[in-house]
Amino acid sequence: MNNEFPPVIERLDLRQADVQRCLDVAREVIGEHQFVCLDCAPVIHEWNDADGASLVYEIPVDTTPSVAADLTMEVINRTVDRVMDLIGFAVAIKGVNTAA
Image (cartoon, rainbow, N blue to C red; front, side):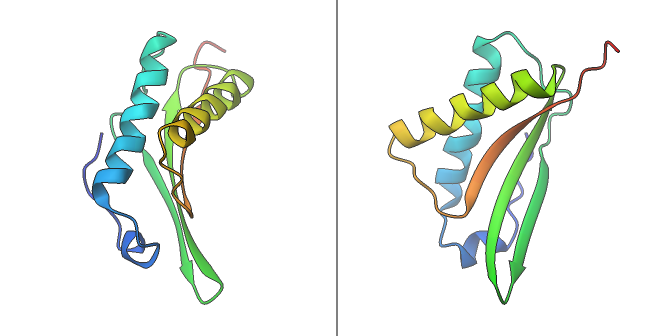
């Protein structure tokens, strides 16, 4: 996955190592369920304006949106369980069913 980190990370006071650990959790979940990422680099969505900042790394996987939502919840739960509650940052799995 892409190792470039956007500037919003500084505003959110995130450490790059923590972001990388969250991405590792996502890879772990995806692999355990025997899915494959459709692209090695996540799509990065960032908001950094006067109202606040947030950062979402979206990983496309060949599955349905419903299964992707379940995988995302598993990533979130594991991330929190590992004491990585990172305010303003999330990793999401995007279901892109290519079989249709």
